Length: 192
Ligand SMILES: [Zn+2]
Image (cartoon, rainbow, N blue to C red):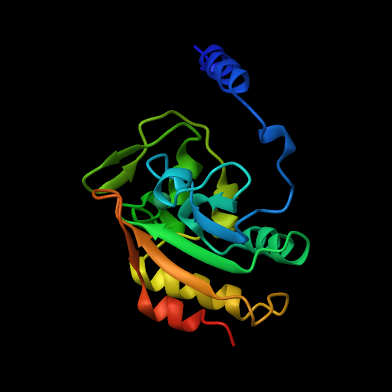
């Protein structure tokens, strides 16, 4: 059972009330970019008050400053003029519940979806798996605020990122919907 029919139906309703959004400019009108987690509970458009055309939102597992996230941010500034960036991780992130070694083992035993129990993820699927998962970094999170600081510092110190861009660090609380600042991250990301 695919969700495709539901998506097409929702899209038809959206397009029917699309209004004048077809004339939006390509560069983000409010000139900022957000890097955050793909977690389904996070809706940056709602928690940060965004409308179509306002801002860039870069998402991946954990909201980590991966090479590819930095690629997007550099394009966001260099070609599309954003002037301020936000790194937003969150409480109860799935990336806290495993390590590279665990992910390697899970994938080596089965490619099917694992189960998250009180002691972390465990395999319930059948094999074969693949050892390929042992050859990459999954950018897991061992320390919630530490990972925000690490990611802001990694972006701040990238030679392609100009010092004029302030980079803020925040944690989104999935129980309250609130953004909590990580002062050490924001300090590390201050414009210079
Ligand atoms: Zn997450």
